Length: 191
Image (cartoon, rainbow, N blue to C red):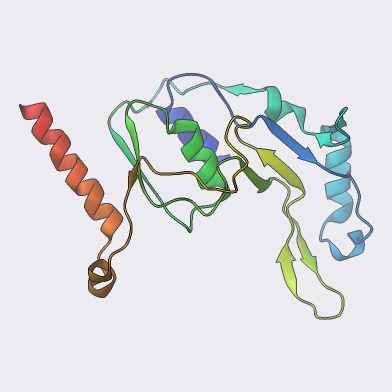
């Protein structure tokens, strides 16, 4: 919800969070290993509905358009830094604002998918023998069905990759690029 709130302050028109948000099933034969399994099932029972595709859809987010905030809305130039360590909420946020005229996305391709990701309810699972703990998302979120199912992340508008020199010096090469873009923008405005 934080990424959606942030989008509301930057975006100029109503926007949808996702084209599709669904679970393949409401139950799991391994439920005894999933934390809060009972509550997750109750939640899914009340908020999802089985559709023709056989999946259980969370229709609210498939239909709902969020409205931009008027108070404190920011119309100035905005730079968003992304990279391989950018996942789910970062991808949702970036995909919602990347087409805004005052937004420039800088960096490297995200680790999370541009088409969609697994999301929403993400309970912990503990394997019975090894006691290994991991998180298992219960929903599939399709951000934009028109994005190709290529397995690619969100691509930056201004690609900035690390260099040997940047790594050697410990410099923040993405932020350096943003500072350069800001200086260029100020020079254009003055002229």
